[in-house]
Image (cartoon, rainbow, N blue to C red; front, side, top):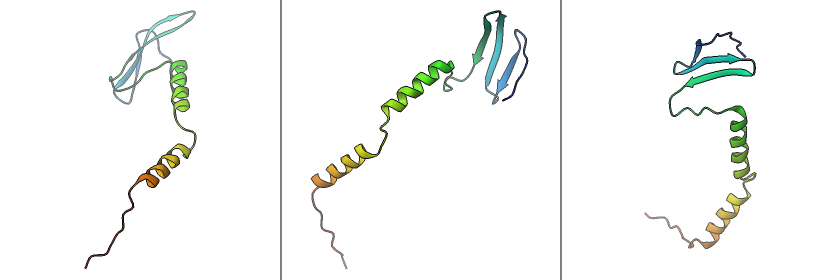
Length: 86
């Protein structure tokens, strides 16, 4: 972890295109501004963890559904006989 001291109105740059600016410092917290390209997702940690958990819950935990679907497709597919052409 990199630890940096910044004062109000000072900033850091990440990867050349993300800037984190200290907007204000109060006794109850630090106010940050983040400038980043639109394609970069920026979330508070608690929001990020909620999204990650929802994604994990929506993802099958095993390959069983995929295997069942593959078996169903194989059983309903027409039988094809391959012949060798000369």
